[in-house]
Amino acid sequence: MSGTVFITGANVGVGLATTSHFLSKGWNIVATTRDGIPSAALRDLQSSNPSLLHIVKLDLMDPSTVESSVSAALALFSRIDVLVNNAGYGEYGPVELISIQKAHQLFEVNFYGPLRLIKAFLPHFHTAGPSGIRTPTIVNVSSGGAHFGFPLGALYHASKAALESLTECMAFELSALSIPVATKLVIPYGGISGTNFFHALVRMNKVFEDSSGGDSAQVQAIEDYKKFTQDMMVKFQAMAGASMSATQVAEVVFEAATDLDTRRLRYFTGAGAEPSAALKLRYLGSLGSQQLVTKKDFDEMDDKYVKQVRALFE
Image (cartoon, rainbow, N blue to C red):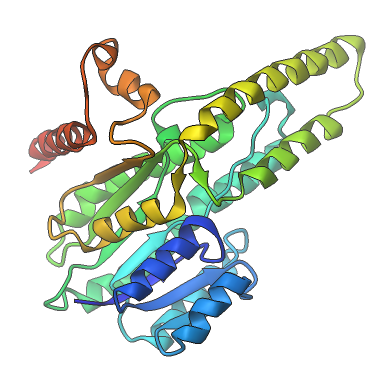
């Protein structure tokens, strides 16, 4: 059965693909963009589905737009069944060279923005309760980067790790309510085609421009970082061949949003049938390289882990 979903960052990439996928299933959608203006692709979807798809403004760097977007959504549809926190971006470069202001902005979008939306929607979820069709559900789109650290991505990885920890802790709390709220994490591991990674690289180049000058030791450090970054970009480009499509991630978002197992927490997805080597090593150590570990194994392992932790508090 269809429902109503609120999707952030709907103009491009995973957000656009998720909007398209929910539309194909007959859902009502409130799709947000930073300025309230749809991209050409999102406008086409709206033109084809004017009664189902509505676009509202939500700038996660402007907390005032959180309340206004939620109010607009509830004015359009009296009930929201699913919140999909998808909007996010990466700030890349050596930690030393990224300003605290840039770090704050990144966490505003990747962590505090989703947190504000969750807190804004929970009162509605409490009063709406189960519709007899589905449980109110929060889906947070995370990243394999929450589970391991790569060079030049420290702030992005940290923001996604914070979102993961928030979601896992919250899942225990919200499942204990008399009207439970399902809490889900979708974890793409690897690159996603059709996203704005190119813009992240442009921002990284600007990090070096903004960091020019200083004493001789600082100038030398910047030159060292530049060489290191160039070497890393060669490695990242070699890894990029195994990217997944935004549509693939969108399908898993829909699976998480509609899964009748409301207590399942994590949904892994990647370019291949197996989890990435980095994710395997993080979870399994050397065992991960000694035996075949499939996505199904990962799902079962994580489900077992969550159940064991739940048992401590129930």
